[in-house]
Length: 124
Image 1: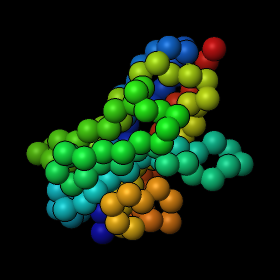
Image 2 (image 1 turned 45 degrees about the vertical axis):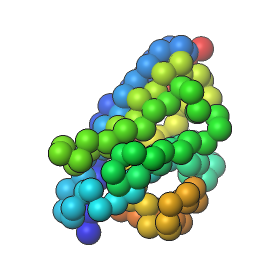
Image 3 (image 1 turned 60 degrees about the horizontal axis):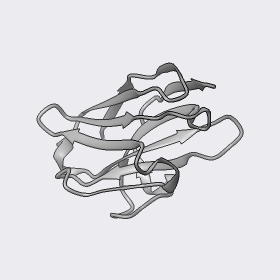
């Protein structure tokens, strides 16, 4: 079992920045590839970014490439999502999760041990 707790959400104007943190406990964090998802009411969870267990490899959904950066610090059992140049379309609840479906997975069913999520609101 892995427990994940996100922090760092908030409200920001378009063009601003926020950074999420996701702290893991319960199992060896460095054994897991990790991902970030987001969800708006009435829609399915949308894949945002993923990072390999070493932190060396990452991949993103096209809409955030060049604006968001996923990173991790295995000494702190933490994965981060730095979000720059935020747009109103980025407004959502963001959650981190452990990747279980293999490297390259983008579907929420390929992830497990979801955090509780944190809200990001971007105003125009």
